[in-house]
Amino acid sequence: MHIQSLQTEIISIGDELLIGQVVNTNSSWLAETLNLAGIDVRQITAVADERDEILRALQEAENRADVILMTGGLGPTKDDITKTVLCDFFEDNLLTHQGVLDNVRSFFRRKGVDLTKLNEDQALVPSKAVVLDNPVGTAPGLLFRRNNKVFVAMPGVPYEMKYLTEKYVVPQLQKLNKGHLIIHKTVLTQGLGESFLAEKIDRWVRGLPGNVKLAYLPSPGIVRLRLTAHGDDLQKMEALLENKVDELKILIPWYFWGMGKEKLEEVTGKLLNKVKATLVTAESCTGGYIAHRLTGVQGSSDYFNGSVVAYSNRVKREMLDVKEETIIQHGAVSKQVAEQMASGAKKMLHADYAIATTGIAGPGGGTDEKPVGTVWISIDGPNGIESKKFTFGDQRDRNIIRTGNAALGMLRNYLIKYTPDLQ
Image (cartoon, rainbow, N blue to C red; front, side, top):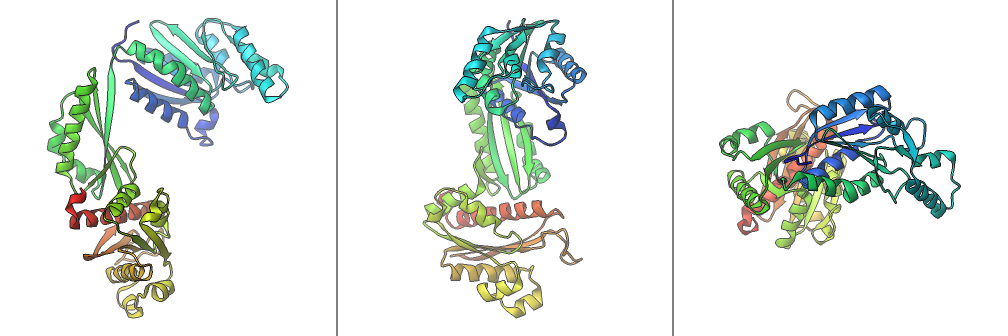
């Protein structure tokens, strides 16, 4: 069989996926793993443990895709019906596979657990299937071929599915894929919303070559720009994407902050290390969220001194030296209070830089003058204080995340602004 660019679909089977009891991490991992191997995933479907639903999903996928990968429903209990449905689909019957039976017996013997009839039934497999050995579990993988299409059924247990994918599925599909490659570069941005970012780089996007696509992946306060190239010459593809990334950096220098799976707190921490500076936070509306992210980075003790969660006005006054008259005159959510919080934390915790946040996270507490989502962030450093007002939405959790990203982004820009060679 010769397929230039394999079109692949994933079918995840299980009621638990459809009622929200279990997150479908298998499909996410599979899609990423296959894509990195140069294999296109065109659709992901989740279906219930129902014969007709599984059959319908298989029939529809067979009409569209070259490869159909299934996970789930291969266990020993009555709700695991994938094998019998596959027999219906391929007009097949179940037979005992001696190799699988030996593996099941060995598996339970190693664990010192008695073997049951249900466990032995794991060795019943469709006669037309190629068995994929699964030494890390009891349910084997099953591979079928029909009408120039490939079908693979794998257990839903994540570590078993991953073993079979890496051991059998990816190598087999790469042989069929005949050198088709897919590579990605993901540019990380902060400080500009998706639509504004799209407008800013529109001309650049329209100039992308035909084998390169751009996708916008927004999250609270951060937009990822994923560049994808298709081709058969890895060196040329990588050089092309590197060139396009360099062009993007020039277009959006103050919004670009990293690549791939980097975290904003990691990038900012590296900059602090480079200038041998220390940081503290004074947090009101974020409630320690920024400090939590900073201390989640290995080695952050080299530059992070500590934090004050000044949620009440009393703590703002008594620990951060925010003036009573400032709160009365301007309110706790104000530029003046944010700046005094930053200065107070910087002095009290003996740091070079301080981040301060104060705002109305919501869903209550807003006014016409200061609606829910109003946030002030201040950065106090060796070159003075810089502050900025933000108006986010009315969702508390998102407001906290967006404030954290905005604060770390402001600190990064502050550091680069006054130390240009950091870029």
